[in-house]
Image 1: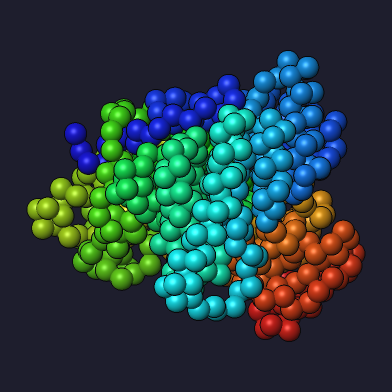
Image 2: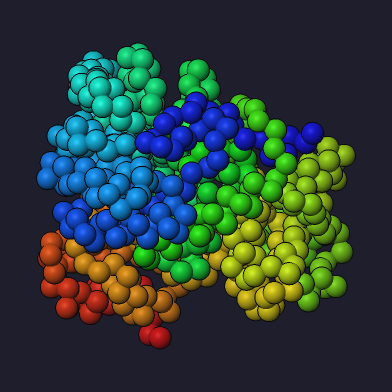
Length: 531
């Protein structure tokens, strides 16, 4: 068996209500409501739509004790109507809400280690000596153990959910804004849980930057294996956006890791109605399920595997060497420069087939540039896009970056070219469009996210090589849009603040004036181009 063959990581099985995550259980599909958790009727109806779309688990926002208690009421109402789907409380900044959620009978509580004990990010460089750092770790234990005990009493699972943009100042002081820091943020809490014999834990570690997300999860697997941990993993690309962009970006990140055997539950985070996330997640899981499986280790044993370097190849024409990744049209095969090898992936796992073939070439000393080619014939367009994003995401994030060619009799040449560019942008290898880092919305969102994102797109979609964050609230504001150049963030009901990176430049603009203010701001920054 090739080292690139599919092998699902065997994790601990964790019960979440009537659903189990991990072990040999099917990969569970999740979504999150974007209704106010205090709106019982709207939240119940949305939970039902998610369940009927095929969702296995639903998450709801718990900003405070009132919202936490209301999740318990939502759970009761769902059961009255014949729906026993597990509910998860999502908690930021407010440990009291986490305790209240467990006591209200929710099936799992998600906490963010970046703000469960540590205060909110200041984005100011702080220094901690070893003694001070150790003191901060003791504070984590003092705060987390009582929560563990509460969850143990109520048979409530915990999700440790790390987000790239909400690392604590303490973690930032020692690790910086890095994958290593994200992993350590999770491991600090996992070590406490293990010391106190609590194992009903699922771990997630997310970023809007797919490259960072993939590397970080790979590192997390290795870190847990090194310390004898086998907690199941929740996968997601946070703030992925909407439409084709959000789907491709999610498929590149989630699909790459699933194809490497990592992941026990997934959420595709789209800035759309939450029930729209489930068919996309199901299509990804179904595709991976077609790969031949041997349960066992995931295989990430050395640091070189976490973020593989670009494969070294010779240069032929504009392909290989240090040249940017080239997109080859199926109509252009005859014009591929001499010295370039076309490597076609076949079978149920075509990316693994290509990686295996190229590996054999390298072992034979044949460092010629290659065109990675996969055909997806007789499939619906949406299926082609998700499969191609999964397969080529894995290839590109494994260092195979000379040239790619996507074939399908379901799509035009222009559509295939656009798809290839979208995948390259998701992998941070080639930028051709404005990228929108947009949250999916939740009970904290301060404006209608879908219409707002549409308005921002209409005003700025013609710009090139920009990343714009559209975030519904300050919780998902400067932190979670860490990878954005500029941000449009809900500041209060009916008001928006504008950001340059993580710095707030203009505060509390009336929403009716915010799009115009954004355009004016981009002009002042010198990045505006007339349509």
